[in-house]
Amino acid sequence: MYEAQNFENLIGTDGFSDQLLKNHFGLYDGYVANTNALMEQLKTIEKGTPQFAELRRRFGWEWNGMRLHELYFGNLTSEPQGTFDADSALGKKIATHFGSVDAWQEDFLATGAMRGIGWVILAYDASGDEMFNLWIGEHDLGHLAGATPLLVMDVFEHAFVLDYGTDRASYLGAFIAALDWNVVSTRFLQEK
Image 1: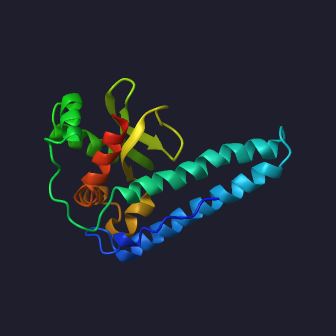
Image 2: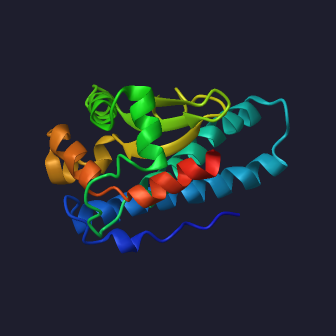
């Protein structure tokens, strides 16, 4: 069984109201609870039934909802980090693939500004030594098998509407300002 992680350390993060964060933590807690419930139900349900099929399909939705939120909250910080170190191993890899860190950020934010709900992920494929900015529709459409999420941004409305209404661009700026680049860099170095 999984236990919800505690992300209360993010309370007070610039650009994210305490109420928005608390609401978001509650949503995440629901994904953890639903993942656990489905794991238990799948142990006892008769295999080959329509109910089994639906629960099995639903499991990926709940699991990814749980994990993507953990990665998202995990790459945020309430302590200002300053600017990203373009001379770090991650910065050099981003610049090699996207042309520059600024070009990567422009592409990442443009992906986040697209219409729709989902996630934006900077992913690294160690096998091909490639980086990609991905749009993940919902929780389960668009993942690249074998690619590791390095940076995860939630672009479901619940991540910003309470604070920004429909002004997604301001949310994207607040997200970038609240990134813990040490976490993102560590994720990258663990994959190299």
